Image (cartoon, rainbow, N blue to C red; front, side, top):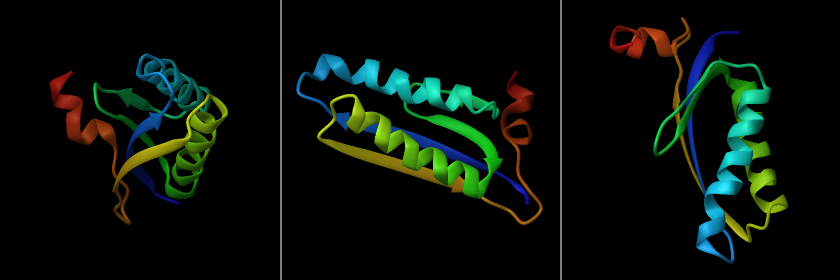
Length: 96
């Protein structure tokens, strides 16, 4: 398998708008628990790993949002895939 990058943005619809960030925090905690490299940004989180694993993370993110009070979840996913693999470092390493 090759390494891909997946950027994930979840926008949970919760009864009180102030409760959005705690739900998103739980999604980020789950991403952290995978042990995969990730970068949290102000609008999305980018994760590096094998595509099937990354897609499973997207599914878990939905479940976490619903389990924490969301009645609906808007999710935006961006995938950078190459048969040769692609890393976050090759894209942003020079900026660190």
